[in-house]
Length: 399
Image (cartoon, rainbow, N blue to C red):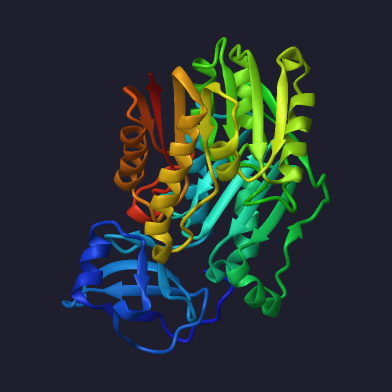
């Protein structure tokens, strides 16, 4: 393991509850879960955890100033964490996507999804010729040269961009690690393909890594039920749902978003797909909640896909009320026989809570309905523990 000088291996003993959580597959050790350690640890070094009988339990990346003190890399039998380890992990990630997701119709996908694929605190998204790596944990900064080398070898990008979450940028500056292109400089906005449709990704400065790849499968589901329908895309952002709906034979599509920039992105994405130009489309710049409650327009298919409404646990109950208000308002605009596709990306709102809020909006509307499908994470966004399970959607036909 390069990048961090070590006097002796950092050894941790955990309280029983944390030990049990690790054995159950949870990838985080919180600071208050550490019973004792043999010395002060440095951010970015390996920490080995032992059980009360001094048997190897797990190994992970230590962060001296984070509430998540250790991000687990391996649990079970002792293992050597080195470049070959990272290389094998990255190759497995690529093999899960090759042909099944990345193919002649799609050259944009998530290649690494953090803890759920053995890279805790890292996501890596690929757009055509550009790999965007986003770090959410300071522990990776000391290891970045090695990880960059592995990613270049496995994923073979022409361009590579490093991005970071705000909470680690100060620490990165102290270490001399900066965001932006690593090596050759490419385009700040990249055009990529998803299921045969072209989209722009603002890879250098856009939200997340430049595009929301996680809704790809739900977009395809919307395409399948759009024929001859007037479609409203609420919180439309890039307009991706609208493009799929248009290709699916929609009679018209309307993008609703408060952001002028987002509506402009949607229009550009339509321009990249001239075969969809015959489908009438409209843009509405407005507060989605208020517009839905006050408008007199009606539609045959409405998608509600807001940004996260609960960024922390304390906002969970308020988010539930917001989802209820949003989907109740959407039902006011939905024609008889119409379809409502409601989605949530709030990790602090469970699937059960979200689905119940949608059902409550339907009960309050006093309209009959039939559930058509529910969905979770796409194959390139695996989630193996509760905190990673943020995405959920439900589709209802309403009479």
